[in-house]
Length: 404
Image: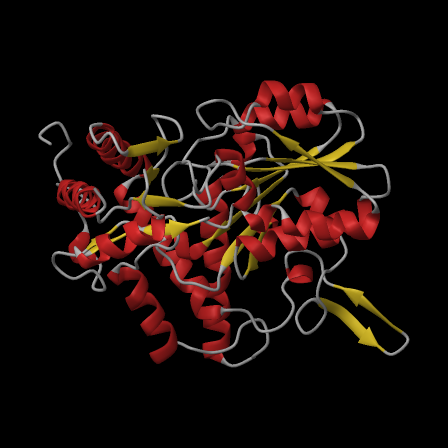
């Protein structure tokens, strides 16, 4: 496999204490391992600087509030938001999509309205829309895929009507790694008066995202896929949309004034952040963004593209392996081994110290479309290199020998 790029300087495995020598971790699309700067930032947050935010008048609380809001500004800069007030901290992309569906959708959708999704969406970008559609009487349409596994925007353009109120699509497929032409999707949605929500979970760890340039109206992502902690994520929304949306959850911090005769609500972002936030998780997300930016998203993208290219090339030489998705998939290679269940593939690879994902990847409609119950998926991160691709291929060769 001499064609692959050098494992230096991007093979950052030494930054990741949870990756032991000789273990090929190829499940980054599910959740990324955490680098030392993130772990250290969270450790300091709990052991040295911890206090509540937005409430205390004592010095440490004020300092933690400053750090918390600095993290919001960091996120806004990272994704090209116009103002930090457009950044809402949520538990993850799932909660962000549910917030938009219940708050924006509950206010704006009615019987006869339509919602546009695609065949490759994660369940988190299907089920919340089904729930609000059932509540409001709106209906859901599903855009098909091209032969190589991309959202077919030509077909979607023909399906869109003025009855469509929102289009919700994955920026990068978590199964196929196919990248959406997000700018064109936004233009198509806006042409019929609809909004565009993008699920950016698989995009933000491996490509530069500028929500203004993309032209979307909402953007969501999870911190744990971006080398940050679990339990923290981001919903970005256009300020005019957020300002018109009612709160989704009630409690402390999201209010202006509470009385038994009535309650008034704080403006965004506080309106959507009820209760005590995941303070240290926000600090960890800040550290993760700094870590990724320190490497350079263009460098990460080139590195993962090379690993994908070499993996697909090697697996193509095995007659029993069916590769899925486009040749230029972003950091993800999904495949099936003829006659072998993906769970067996994953178990045998685990014996060889190679960790992949096997299953339906929370995308059962896509599996049905592909004619499969499940697939095996290898996904890459900054800690992967040539040795991990070689270990994967050796493991797949062992699978084919065992089941021959």
